[in-house]
Image 1 (cartoon, rainbow, N blue to C red):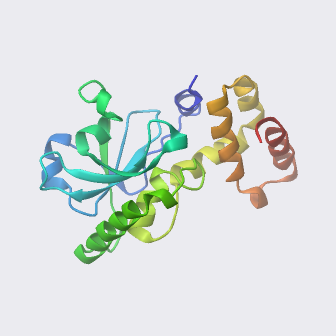
Image 2 (image 1 turned 45 degrees about the vertical axis):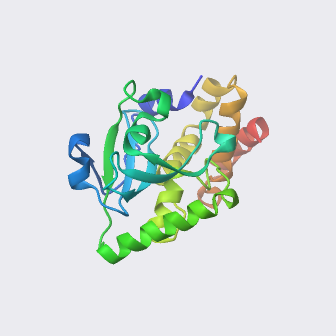
Length: 211
């Protein structure tokens, strides 16, 4: 069972990136540009992120950190229809919303640099290992834009995990191995220094269960 949509809905959490706006997919060629940081999702799902490389190709080319199996995820190229669908097999079956992440003080030069960084990351794809907490698709896109690995949605999920530890523990204590690994990865990114004594105690129980 994938617990994420359930928890997002249960706690009414929106993982939409800050400073992003939903755009019409039909207008993507007019609204997107090389170097654009984009994301896709449906309500109460995680957001998948990527960097637009070329808008002049038939389906708009993108570089992102993705894999059908998270253990084998890597930096790779894709097209906008596949990016939105989630996989090539889901094209025409799964249509998610498309978002453009906006950056203050953005310039054409910064956008061009973003493309160069994304292409360099693609060349060194074997050196980048996926990790839900520290090296995920959002972190990759943010790094290409800002040279900083940062995942806003991971921070939100970690905060929910800590603030509602007891309630969540009861709901996921029988989680399958894949979800156990995801929970463990989130725990490793938890802001331990910011927790009070009771939260640290709950955090300890989680670590015993999932680490």
